[in-house]
Image (cartoon, rainbow, N blue to C red; front, side, top):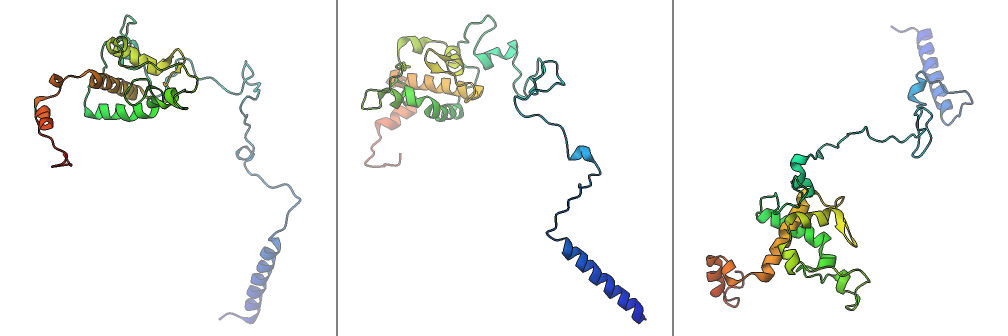
Length: 223
């Protein structure tokens, strides 16, 4: 059984603790805060472009170690055709290293429409809105070439890839915006555009020709 003095002491302790805790609320101490581990609170750091006397060149911003290659960006002479569109002798690769299928062409079309259509047009004829907008007057840019002239229809795939990567004349390169795989997909789609403008009936598979010959949109609009 708890005695009266003990109960009194417990109540007094609780009351005193409440007063102390409530009195601390909102107070600002003029004393220096206690930091048991100072290096966790006050680490030395440098802002961009600041000087740092620790290094011989006095610069805080450091360059990557020579030979550093970001993960996934290892490029050697063995894979130069894929990353640069070049053969071992420095000539352009004749054909794309990607296997051409419907998925690649659809990706190439999607990327082409984003990056190439404004200047080269949806048909690849150089009649994009940047070239033909403003009431047909354009906006003062160097005219984009058509992909359908004889020179570009006969040029190597590696050349088209290089132009997308590095740019040519007044066209800027898109190496930072478009991945190598997407650049090759665009090249493949450009070839499809070229073929579409010069294809003959014999280039269309026989089953497709037969279906088109009997096609009547008024009878079955869904086909």
